[in-house]
Amino acid sequence: MGHMTELVQSALSRALAGTPGRAEHEVVEEIGTDVYETAVSQGWIDESDADFALGTPRRTALELLTELGLFTFDDHARRWHPVDPSAASDQLVVPMAQRGSELLAESARWNDTFSRLGKVYRGSSLNLQRTLTEVHGVENINRFIDTQLNDCRTELLTAQPYGKRPKSDLAQAEPRDLAALRRGIAMRTLYQHSARQSPATREYVSDVVALGAEVRTSDEFFKRLLVFDRHTAIIPATENHAVAIAIHDKSVVAYLVDIFERAWERALPFTVEGEAVARTIAGEVRAMTLRMLVEGHSDVVSAKRLGVSARTYASYIAALKEEYGVQTRFQLGWAMSQSHDGQLRPPYAGRGAVG
Image: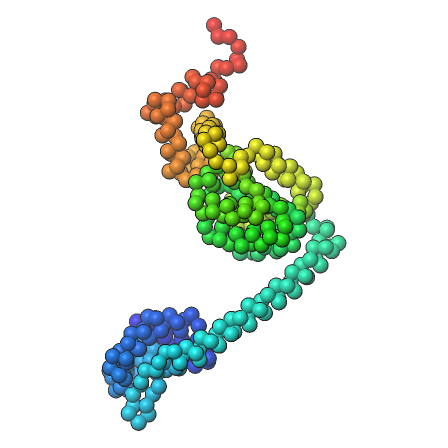
């Protein structure tokens, strides 16, 4: 109750200053609505009403609503009378919308100015001397990517591992990517096969492909990579992607582009469907699962490299056990070592004749 009283009083102070915002709206929603309904049902609220005594949250909320134009106070009768909200809305919401439009226009002007200054810097001899730039924090990294993409003129290459991308990431990336495609940027994106199982990713891919982007998937694991016009590459510097490295050195960028191109050539078009493609993908996923088992990786690491959840990876293992007719992983390993159709060589292969 004490916290709510402080919140209401703080909201009232801001309303008196003429700057109502989220806190004031929260108070109106949580307490003010009930206060207003009480006044409407009764016709008014008396100053002597014990429920609205000075210092109580309801009294402070009542005073806030009065400042917002939802009540008028009758000095003679010592009562508060409710007012039609549409009148208060015209006085409060319309100016807010106008200020919002002005702020959007102002932010656009500042963005244009900083964009021009950024181009000056990136075209300077000082910028040409740089080879690496560290960017800390997810928000800063996203802003850095936005800037690079706004300046991009010909080509964007991206490699997005770990299977399906979060809906929030796709929602942030799609408008930016579509705008780049409409400017004529050539865009190629590489995912892992598991991304095909994500409805949100499939919808995103459908939208960008419709504007000319190319998207493929691979069974191989790779690190995240973005390359802009083949002059700047961005890679993660930490496992949690909280730090990124922007690489400006031409030879290193060219090396990363070559790695991307090799992976691209081995990948399958995302938009191509059919039994043949499904069989190929299933076979590649199976082979990768076998490889993870043979190399002795943990389930967590194996799932990450396949771009799937730990539960999905466990289902892959269960399917292999059923395929080989075994109950345990030890039995599975032994069965695989005796079989050539698992695409694995038995441990004695290549060591010469025995006996």
